[in-house]
Image 1 (cartoon, helix red, strand yellow):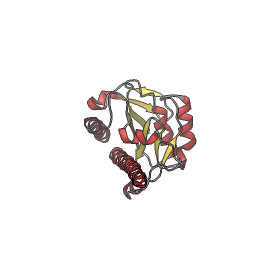
Image 2: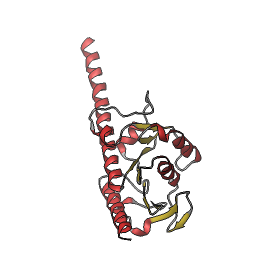
Image 3: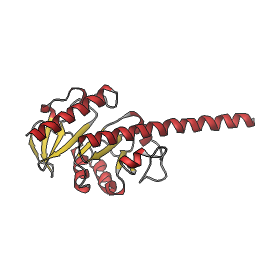
Image 4: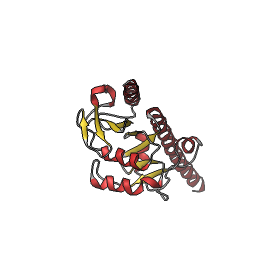
Length: 205
């Protein structure tokens, strides 16, 4: 139980840290971790800013609700990642601002949509794949995720937001932070490129 207690404390801290720094809003995010063969996942409608131990549902690996409140409707995303990536023991899904912006763009290589401006994203996670759009909580979204989960190491749901895993909760948190920072850098440099192109055109006129 001490191990479970520590995991719950980490999950609650992560939720509040993300909420306090505007990486999540309202009840739009979910996180989970594995413990003794079961999935502990934030409940439907819970807010990261005020999570308690009572805000977690417990399900089996096949999705059967075992105890606690109603699990997040996006539980299947977490299950797919656990089933396909044995090294993943915790998953975080948010709608963080820059990652969501980047997920709305068109990308040539959908198996790895993040430019490698710094080495840290590749060092921490690897490739970031784009998952085709499906309505949140829909079978279409889960199908798209299942079809592409093995193509990349981390993910952006198109027009929706990031999904990342880690070997534990803190690793998943660090991975999410690195992805969001990489998306911010990519977005700023994209805008810088646009300004430079505009300035170059003006000098030719």
